[in-house]
Length: 180
Ligand SMILES: CC(C)(COP(=O)(O)OP(=O)(O)OC[C@H]1O[C@@H](n2cnc3c(N)ncnc32)[C@H](O)[C@@H]1OP(=O)(O)O)[C@@H](O)C(=O)NCCC(=O)NCCS
Image 1 (tube, helix red, strand yellow):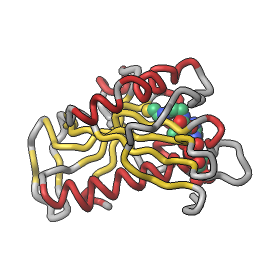
Image 2: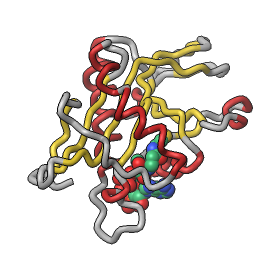
Image 3: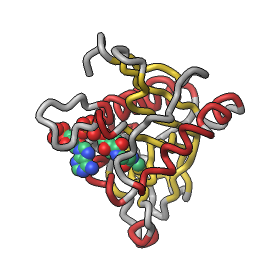
């Protein structure tokens, strides 16, 4: 991402998503959330949304929304020292929404702006260095749409390997913050 061209910052009242291009009708709910829910959720402390703004035209090129969550696993976790944690739920940060405007996506372009990867790295940084420093938090998770599973694998996420999860339309994928 060219830092003269783009700025990553919290959502502001003046940000508009009206001309945001989803590229696929399946992603229309992501645009609807950005247009109608992101700002009220921000004010109600239900979610935090960050945007990448194209400074050449003041357009929102991408956004990510983060919330507190948990990951459920029937499996015992072993931490880096070999301690066992036989809990069914583990604290997590969830990527509740992520979308890059179709005109800014890297897939297939010779020169990618990598805005999706930039937002994932930003979320991992917050989860690992800010949240997990102060509050117990082991994972960052996402309910991945079928069309975005390959993207999340590319940026380091793992599919939760349980029969329930494999049967879900939107599959839980995770990064273990202890391993970053
Ligand atoms: C998925 C999405 C966020 C990716 O954003 P992006 O800016 O195009 O991604 P990047 O350019 O950072 O891509 C990073 C890598 O993933 C790859 N990638 C991107 N989208 C991919 C896809 N759909 N399938 C497979 N690989 C993909 C890129 O080729 C790149 O690989 P490289 O590092 O080998 O060059 C974007 O395509 C999007 O907004 N899609 C629609 C909404 C969506 O699916 N959101 C997620 C909901 S769970």
